[in-house]
Length: 90
Image 1 (tube, rainbow, N blue to C red):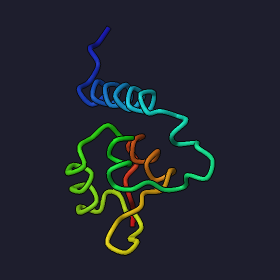
Image 2 (spheres, one colour; image 1 turned 180 degrees about the vertical axis):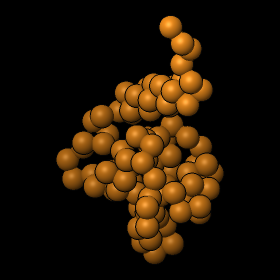
Image 3 (cartoon, helix red, strand yellow; image 1 turned 180 degrees about the horizontal axis):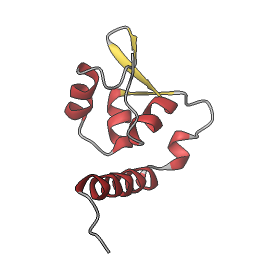
Image 4 (tube, rainbow, N blue to C red; image 1 turned 90 degrees about the horizontal axis):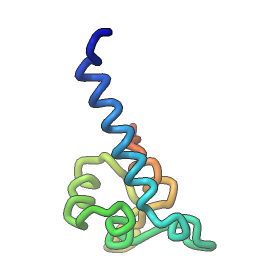
């Protein structure tokens, strides 16, 4: 039996990390009635990353929140897609 390729191993690790992140997110927070968007601080907390990391992701265009006044709002589906490894394609 041949050994798995490095790409295969990386893909499996990425899938497990994604699964772990999604399972650690509080589902009730994403599915709370009426809560369609989150502030940058709330979004970072839900994703389990520091706020400055989320800001960097936003500035690189990997996630595209809505600008409301001086703040940003992150949609529920946007955060779920990001946590699953999907990036903005615009």
